[in-house]
Image 1 (cartoon, protein in one colour):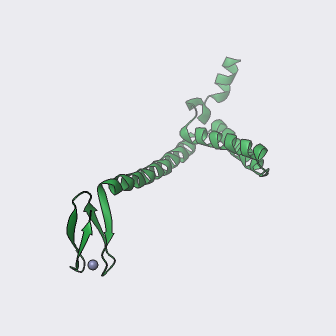
Image 2 (cartoon, protein in one colour):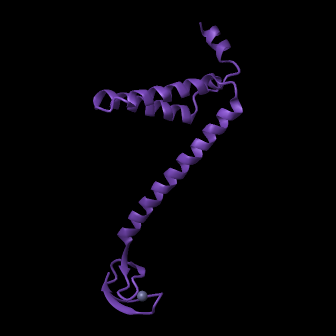
Image 3 (tube, helix red, strand yellow):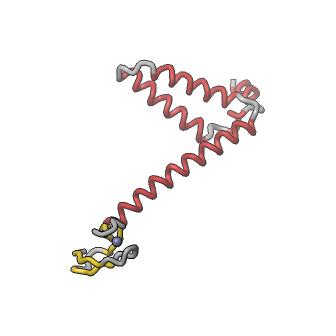
Length: 134
Ligand SMILES: [Zn+2]
C-alpha cells in the first residue's frame, strides 16, 4: 500500500509534502465546515468543499513549478499581513512612551515623550507654541 502511494505521488506536487498554502486552505476548510454546521450559513459547506477540492488538485498536480509559485505568492502575502499587524503593535507601544498632541492652530500631529511635566510644544509646521502636560 505504501509502495502504491509512493508511486502514485511520484512526480506530483504532493510528493514534496504539504506546503503552507495547502495547510492554510485545509485549516480554512475545517473552519468553514464547522461554521456551516454550527451556524445557519449552510453555503459555507460548499466553499469548504471547493477549497478541499483545490487542495487535492494541487497535491496531485504534475505542474510543480506552477504550484510552487502559488505557494510563494501566498507566503509573500501572509508575510506582508504579519508585518502590517506588527506595525500596528509598534504604534501601540509608542503610545505608552509618547503622547500625540494636535497643534491647535494647524492640527499637525506632534509626538512628545511622556513624563516630562509641563512643556512648551513648538509646532514644526506652523511654529505655533502651546503648553501641554506630558
Ligand atoms: Zn501648527
